[in-house]
Image (tube, rainbow, N blue to C red; front, top):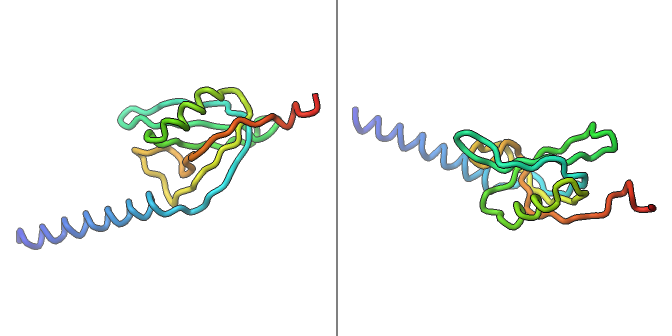
Length: 122
């Protein structure tokens, strides 16, 4: 009986490890988005994650929510510096969310400040 229980536990652990490796290391898509950085914060009760939002429209109707991994210290510093400014985000999208990494499937890998298209000709 103990041998069967050990096999079942081992299979469950292997399945979880396979799922985690697939979600973490496999990128579903990559891309860029531009908009005004309207929110960036470190939130959570059990797992603290970096979460943010950019507004992609004039009325703020289209919001892009994203996460940043704790290990990306340079990206975190840039996002804190660019709060309220127009930015271009480079992201990678994962297959699913992982609660201890972030609330979204979109993880920012680079951020660059840009000139807002609303004020280019002024």
